[in-house]
Length: 308
Ligand SMILES: Nc1ncnc2c1ncn2[C@@H]1O[C@H](COP(=O)(O)OP(=O)(O)OP(=O)(O)O)[C@@H](O)[C@H]1O
Image 1 (cartoon, rainbow, N blue to C red):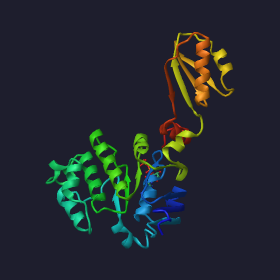
Image 2: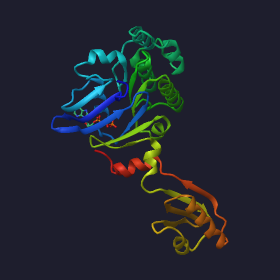
Image 3: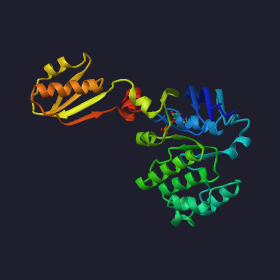
Image 4: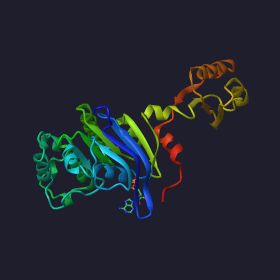
């Protein structure tokens, strides 16, 4: 039972009218992991998450969440999952603390609401109506409500959008603790650093399909291997340097005395550059190896055009 994923989506299609927002998507989320779902605006992230939560009915494909069908077995599923929507889902007139306590009371072993209020910096908001909270405070309250029942599985849709850096870090700490306690977390985000910080698995979605997945390290490892930068005297003979390097390397002087080499950056390449510099009386200052970031990978895979 435990071997099956916490979330398993196969060939999911969800249309709005004639337009397929999700178009044959596959997703598997292992138990006890944090999965970050990335994708350009309109890629289908929220729709996918909402299908998994049971808020939307798939047009085709199969969805199993904790082994259950979210549409036909929603009543059994809902007490076991926590959901933080992008917006709303909360009665606007209710007081923040009252709502959190009410939600906690629905669960057998909730986290102490006072603890969450303190952890998420909501002490001053307790008696304020939800609609009067700032956007960031509403977000934090929605997060608290999603996790207060100690769910086995939590869906967080852009949990840190619009949060200040302090609240972002508090959210990250909370996600790490949920994972340490054995919960499974699925979050969507546009922040690549958030995915790098938190995710065991990153899934990139575009055009309603999953186009890449792996750990952040796995995704950053492939393709163009890396970049080497150094400073030296201006006007170095790059043709001579390139002759010493593997055939597919690139070298450029970006500004006078500032050099960039692209290619398979490995210890051998470093040794070759250092040796070439030694032979030519060059001290390679500020020599630095730069790996591809998740943002580089994301833009390579999804392109640079704006989504409309
Ligand atoms: N209720 C709806 N009715 C009609 N079209 C919708 C509806 N909800 C979403 N869509 C469309 O479906 C597509 C996918 O939307 P979705 O919200 O799932 O994307 P997303 O990846 O979460 O985007 P974002 O990063 O902007 O939140 C978009 O083209 C969107 O306009």
